[in-house]
Length: 376
Image (cartoon, rainbow, N blue to C red; front, side, top):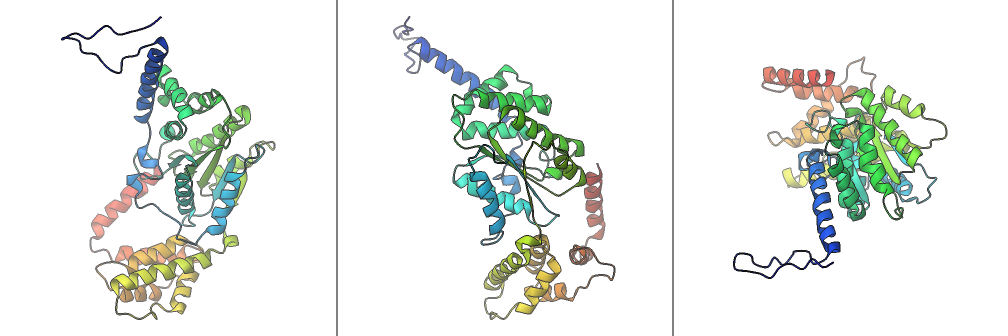
């Protein structure tokens, strides 16, 4: 039966986009429906947790030609099309080792190649990025944009249950990921690549473990064609969750330790950044500053932690101070005799920076707020 619109009249002009057939009418209806579902889904995501979020700018990023071995290992794992390959890689290491920088670099590389399906960067002190409530809606929303074949089914799933984003994490995964992917006419030729960074900064330890279990359950029970790069500190409860997975479940562990020679990468990072500081701040200074001995001392004090090197550079590049004086202050600091932790030099540097703040009372109030937020 034809749905030919009536002829135009002065009070009713012809609408050029009116459907002319039942098939087109259904297509328009379906498009309107799933777009409504996608719009509703979008209102429940955490936009600040995306890898390219303005809230995170500038994000941590691997300096050129650093952490290349780690990134190559991840890339080989991600590119493996064998269905028996591990669907999850756990990248872990201590605070300041550069996990988020690696995750950000992989996200940007995959995004440029249109291979990144979704990303979520947890952050304890960033509103909306510390709760797991928006984790799977955010992943589903990005999947819908990444693969047009999923856009309709994900949108219709939300339209069928507008409260799905407020239901259990298990229900969210089933409705927003498992079922829509199962409706695809053919299995994707490559698994969808998803990055979850800072899992240990999710605001609930039980939920952190639960997220791992939910992901593995979906993979094992449904063969979910997704690869998850999960990055976190090796917190005991997270390690225990991975260790307690059944022996039939395979995943890849990748630890950021001295195996990857972080000192070499830190030295390259320092050389490049100090050269940039010299060009910008000390245009008439020769190339002898800082000396190789000074750089090696900073590398030694860093103990493999990029965060120490980054903190030194920020301190040296303070716009209100002379870079050479600032570096001399850093090199003059000494740790306490009991400083056996690899973070002892970083603690000493932070102690000096905080003690030099002219507004101690305001600083103490801010620190108290941060400590209370972490406890809660």
